Image (tube, rainbow, N blue to C red; front, side, top):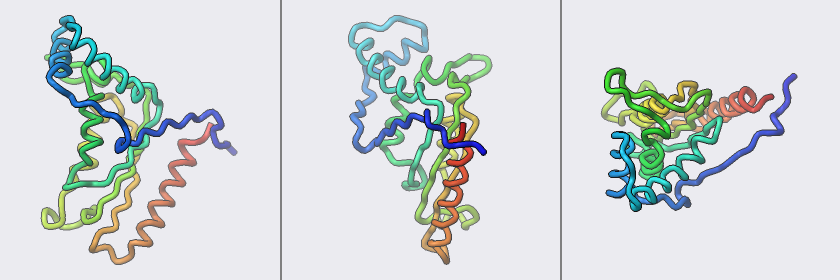
Length: 184
């Protein structure tokens, strides 16, 4: 029987406490210069160095656990800001004018732990919301090159007859995923 991986290193990034810079004009200009294959001036270089540092932490990971509630059919603004900072050319993706985007991250795995208070699979839409949360995260991860993605959902809504059962099922799924991905 496999054992829990004792070499597993866990790096937790709490986006609510993280110091995330604005993606301002200098960083946007640097991004466009990177896409065009042009050099960066001093201010742009400084801004791009900051982006590379933030993205480097993400790139260094082999596995990702992204826990996100659904906010207004999407993701929380801090997660969106983080994605906007790290999802950069030459870092997470490249662009070929003829064939489109190509992800640069290889052999990575992501687990999405998603919650929603009103939306749940099978609910009538749009009266009770639309799930752009998982769609957005899948598209983003795929564009970065991450295609091995698991989903774990806890979506007891106002219409769920037994929220405790929903929690029990989500916890069972979490244990199963931990057993699969935490083994040597």
